[in-house]
Every structure is written in C-alpha cells, then in structure tokens.
Image (cartoon, rainbow, N blue to C red):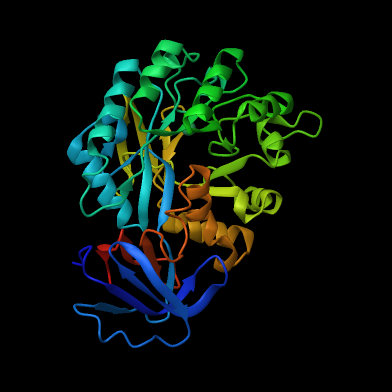
Length: 392
Ligand SMILES: [Zn+2]
C-alpha cells in the first residue's frame, strides 16, 4: 500500500485533464497531491527515492468519482448512524472509483437526522482506506408530500427554523435538498447560501415560475432530475422543463437506465451540456449485495433486475455504482469519455464549491484518481495519494 509520503508515478495512461482530455501521458503524486503531469514520454524519475511506478497499460486515468447523493451500500445506510457502517460505505464506494462522497440522509425524525449528522461530524477525518467524507447531503425532510417518492411521507414537513438551524449548526451539511415551492422553505435557501451550503430542488412540484423564484433565492441544483418532480409539458413546463430552461440549474442524474430512459438522459445532456449534468448513484443499502428483500427505514424494499422498489412499485433508490453510471451516460448520449468525464467528478466538485482542490487532474489538486479499463471496470483508486483499491 502506498502512503502519503511515498511518491507514486502512473505512466502510460490516457489522461483526462480539463484540456486536453484523452491523450497519453503520466502523472506524479507526492504528499497526497498531483505534483506534476505531462503528455508523451515519461521523464526519468529514477532519482526519486522509494518511487512506486504503475504502468497503466494505456487505460483511462480520470479524476476520482465524486458522488454527491448516496444513501448506502453493503447492508448499511447513512441513517443507521453506525461507525463501521460509514467506514464500509467509504471502502465500497472506493472499490467503484469514488474518491469523495456526501453521505445522504433522508426524511426522518429530527433526532434520527441529527444522529446521522453528528456521526459524520465525528468521522470526517477518520476514514482509512476509503473515499473521503465531504460532509452531508441533507435530502429532506422539507419536501413536497405529493412527490415523496420513497421518502417517508409521515415525516415530510416545512422548514422549521429551530430544527433546520440545529441541523446546519453541525457544520457538516454541504448540500441541502428541499421543495422550493413553499414560501415557508424560502428562508432556508437564503440561510444556506449565506453559509456556503448548496441548495437543490427536490421531491418537488415546482412549476417554471416557482423554480425561477427559487433560483433567485439561490437554488442552483436539481435533485435526481426527472424523478419525484413535475414532468415536462409544452404549456406547463413542470420542474424538469424549468430546470432545462434555467441555465443556473445543474442537474443530478441517476443514469441506471431504470430511473430515467436512456433517451431522456440524452435529451438532458443535449440541453444542459455535459457541464450541466452531475452523475449520482442514489444508492441504498442493497448496493453491492445480491438481489432480494431489504429494509428501508421501517419499510421493506425488493431488489429485482437491478431496481429497488417499495411494495407499491415506487422506486426507492438504486444499486448503481459510479463507473456504471458513467458508462451508461456515454452510451445513452453517444458522446465520448473525453466529453463526459466531467459528469462524474468536476461538475460535482464545482457544485459544492470544492473544485479548487478536487474534481480534475491538475497540478496542486488532491491526488484523487481512478483508473478505468475500456469496459469501465475500476482497476485502481487513489485517494489523496494513497492506493485504496487495486485490481491491477
Ligand atoms: Zn430522493
């Protein structure tokens, strides 16, 4: 295993830098950062002591995936608020190329949400051998019950000041998803903006005018686009149509081909451009495990043919992993990895304001890397310069 102090050279790789993307080159990691990179022949680094060299065999080296919306995997969920659970999530995601993520809460009681927030607060700098915890994505509870999806409708409520401020005061929330059509929720958008927390419109029936108003208050993102929102109409644009029309909005997308038809994925990318779409998994407890029956809060879900559903058929998150999401979006859009790599890393980093440290292969940024073979299988994951997963 590589350590922070040991320099790491990856050569003979197709490098996906912001410009150019996809050229053969090399990348040198030192002290957890990208120290140098270049295209063409690898310079002679034999003078460097204890240098670990990896021949990438012409495969694709991308910035590590950043998953902003993920609830669980391997039998664990963020809402379990368990230390070993969070550690296992971080390791499982890393084995799928994720180098940083936002553990995502869902609609629940004040006490349950607070417990999950406090655990992430304690764990943030203590995850070993896995993806970095970036903070928390608070999904709900301030949603629209008519668009609850699998969120527990009994706990959906409007943004209460005392409660929401207690959540924010933990200091770990980086992204907050709410239904912006309610006047009672607008203050929270502004409070989040004031604190540097990104706000996403979620589980919402907001129409064009309401989403436009939300943008004026500071909403910049749309949660799992197309899912749990008002659909597109030509007179009544619905939430998705409004998000397509408003350039300020970045669109999360679950590209598992179950939540959204591949052709609808293509439309979204064609409209928003590759820089306007953020791939997420929305993965839940069953991710990484065999199909069958699992629990979601106090309800049961069934995983069959890659879909996670409540008893009534409602989709309840996914078992998607990020490398498959990237493969699917490339296939759905017919666009190349040179164009689409931003959807699994840089766009997410920009969305939560961390793109000066993460999200692209550039000198001085964190050495968060994923090596993908031609079939999008993860061969190597590097988090802050340390190899956390290898199948070389
Ligand atoms: Zn959701």
